[in-house]
Amino acid sequence: MTILVFALLAYLLGSVSFAVVSSWVFKLPDPRTYGSKNPGATNVLRSGKKAAAVLTLLGDAGKGWLAVFLAQTYSPVWGLGDEAVAVAALAVFLGHVFPIFLRFQGGKGVATAVGVLLGLNVWLGLLAMATWLAVAFTWRISSLSALIAAVLAPLFSVVLLGFEAGTLAVSAMSLLLIWRHRSNIVNLLAGKEGRIGEKKSPDS
Image (tube, rainbow, N blue to C red; front, side, top):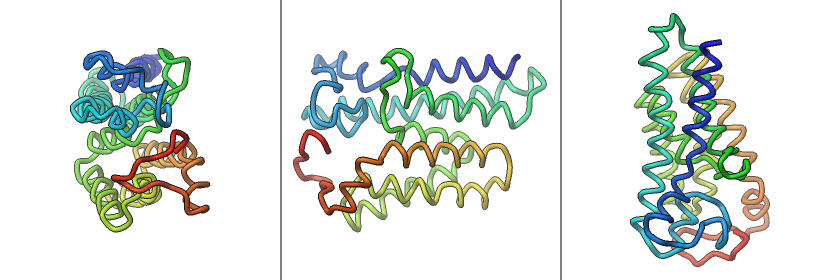
């Protein structure tokens, strides 16, 4: 029962959309009404308010890290092991992707996934971030960077964490993140995906 409480609290934390929160703070339109209509940092950046996009990025990553940190801190108190941490890690990610507060229509989960990875293992998070940056610097395509980082994250996790519950959570997040980028994959295959710094079409 306690592990279900961990999962529920992590899910509710993940359901807090910092794209919507930061847009409200900076008096911007709801990010679900323009651009890609995705409540994430990339779409908030299209509003032209960089501070709002930064707040969204930090908030979404921060909630992923916080859920894992709290689970790591309190799971021993309740006699729980790594499984509770893995459940919380996956639950906060699911909360971001399928938030109850936004009728289960959330973001793609890149920033929250990075926060979770940093919480599970700092080097794991840094490797994922380095992968994203290397691909972005080379091809200047944000979605491609996220997809390659998602593919490699489980491999990094196996090396750093071994075949444990945390690696299963990372693998599940990677699969969901790739699934959430399915429209971007179609655009990539068609050569239509926008590059970083270019103005993107509303359905990108």
